[in-house]
Length: 474
Ligand code: SAM
Ligand code: SF4
Image 1 (cartoon, rainbow, N blue to C red):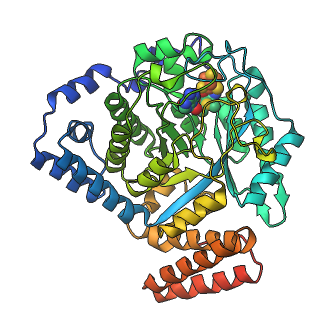
Image 2: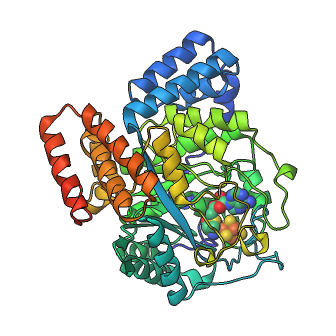
């Protein structure tokens, strides 16, 4: 059946009424945890079980500094156990900023006449991708405003063009997208392009706030957006990303709702989202974030640690909206993916500009370090920068990916693949000092691998990379 935002009513598909505000608030108000409960919940998460809404509320309601410290320590341990030391790197690429919606927090809102509107031509797109490849990127997320011109065929074409750009040893091996909700047929079309993750944020799961922030355009239909990923799954896209924009409504509510969304997808499709994003509201053209509902740095760090514990196997993405010091801190408490060398101006990757012009961009970013600096910093902290795309290439996504997300998988596949993609980066793009430090890190990692066969295979592949072979993975 074909749905559209205007015609879509949640009553049509009752199983999808999965955000019950009354239930979320009731649980939050009932819970008054003591330290033993908090410790039990942390222990449950460390045994790699996903937390219930009630468990999540126990963590959210713990304000005692000692318990907050224990929650953060739990998140740190879990991250190390499940994800190891690797941090996946990507870059956003804005394709067009025309938009028919009027989201009150976004520089692209239709009513913002100061915003200069552009859609990259396919030639422009190629130039941007070449610049990103020259920096060493292998994974991109394409971002679009919501506009009839950014329909499924356009998205399909842009994704295919990006995959086709090869410069030197450069290539983009995974193209994720962040785009407006589609109907099932259009999701099928987008899937045919070979996308990695389809990502969409509910912004706020609180209906009344949602209505306030989205006064006009198709985005005003809360249910249509909430159920986008159900339609994506029905269209066969089993790799999806969810998110909430923190700063629109109470952050505790949004964390509960994100966990509920995960439960829903797991219950109905047997696979949860691949990633969760938690953008925090930033200044934008004509918008001061402090006038909305700012989330403090302390609360932000807490909420990320709680999300880490609540959904042990879901990747957590933190973008350059956040300043370097928050990004660096949060790498410890659970973030598994970050962007690097980010520029969100349309066509910005081929311009040299120090200052952002918010009339050409969606919002302010606070970490504009180039990719090589970010990689240098990760290496300095003994973290392994990864450009790995192997699971997606080998079909280990969705339900299959969940099977692989078991203890040991990361050690056998993700960590070695991170090392291989780091070696490629070091050979092709790293400044000399970063190359030295990078290979020292690889040597330290190799020394810690106990599985002899794995180590031998990895060493062989590393030699091949030094000889010029590329795109090797387990
Ligand atoms: N037009 C698509 C949509 O709305 O789904 C693409 C979204 S937009 C280009 C990517 C995300 O940026 C939005 O979903 C929103 O969460 C976030 N965003 C918008 N304005 C923001 C702001 N002022 N600060 C931080 N994030 C913002
Ligand atoms: Fe348009 Fe998306 Fe910005 Fe809303 S958040 S105004 S839909 S680009």
